[in-house]
Structure formats: C-alpha cells, structure tokens
Length: 178
Image (cartoon, rainbow, N blue to C red; front, top):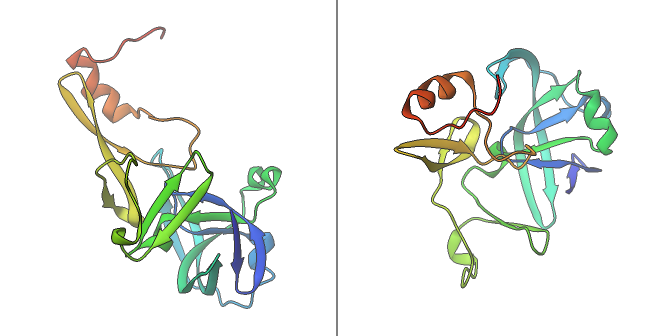
C-alpha cells in the first residue's frame, strides 16, 4: 500500500500480524529520536531486540495518524526485494475498523463499522489481542483454535509445536510424512 511517513512517501506491506515496522533505509531519512531497545517476539516465539520509535505523522489516503509507535528493522533485507519501506501493522488501527475487499483490492479504514455498507459482505467475528492483532476461531474436529488473521503471511494456518502436540492426540491432523 502507499503511505506517507513524516512527509516521505513510500510503499509498504499491509500486515495485520505485525506492528508498524520501518526499514532503517527509511528511518535514517526521518527526524526522529530513537528510544530504548525493546524485545519483540515473532510468530515462532523468537525474541529479538529492536529500536522503538515514535513517528510524528503517518498518512494513509485521507487518514492521518499521529505519534504512532514503530520499530526499526535493521536486518530485514528480504523486504527490499518487494520494493517496500516497511510494514503497516495492526497497532496503527487501534480504535478503528478495517475492511478488506480482496475482489476490488481495496482497504478501507473507519472510526466505526456503521460507516460501511456491509450488504452482501462476508465477515468473521474476530477478537483483538496483543499488538492489536486480529484473531478468529476455527474448528478442527472436536477442537477449536484461535488463528491470527495475518495479511503478511502467505499461508492460512501455521501450526506451531504447542498446537501440534495439543491437536495430534485428538485425531484431527492427517500427518503425511515425518
């Protein structure tokens, strides 16, 4: 998606499974003061240390966000191949409703759901957890699981070891190889 970070335009990945994160190639051009390093845990449970930044203004179309918290990504060279400057993450949309129209390739953001015409639209009940990330429930046989709705992940469901060990005895998994 297109966004403007403190007046600097760029392309970003819309990632509901992450927080706002900016590549160092962009943050080096911004006039910001680094705050302390903070621990960040990824989807696989790996904890890394990143600089926490406060971004004075972010523009997404006609919407503007002030004093948004972000982390600086110094070791994410793989994002450069996408020609992006970072991730527009879920923490930016606290107290907002996001509508994703895959058919028309449109993301709409509003302060309330009543502003959307939802006639004929499909929706899932979701809950919000750490970092303002959206989760929904799926049924796997007799078990239910909460799944992160992660627009930055190419897959639908990543099964970690904890969930594998919980679900395997229930017979809801069909293991094809070991």
